[in-house]
Image 1 (cartoon, rainbow, N blue to C red):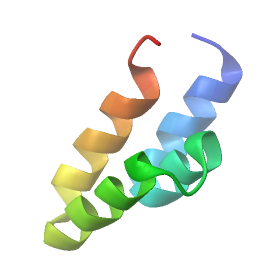
Image 2 (spheres, rainbow, N blue to C red; image 1 turned 180 degrees about the horizontal axis):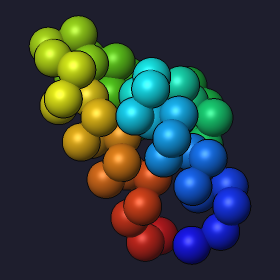
Image 3 (cartoon, helix red, strand yellow; image 1 turned 60 degrees about the horizontal axis):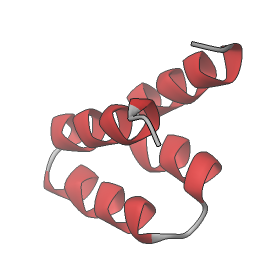
Image 4 (cartoon, rainbow, N blue to C red; image 1 turned 90 degrees about the vertical axis):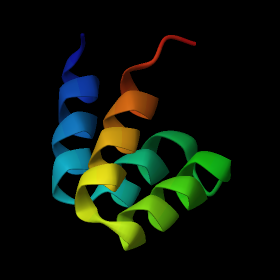
Length: 56
């Protein structure tokens, strides 16, 4: 796990859509994260961390 991944995860905990946006831009993952964050803070955080740490 690199330094950028750790920074991305910290941003995902503070503001989940921002962490996803910095990695993927304005793609589907960002909009899903925004929607989940609107439904509740915790679902947005869980999704953001999952998306940022999954293997490609």
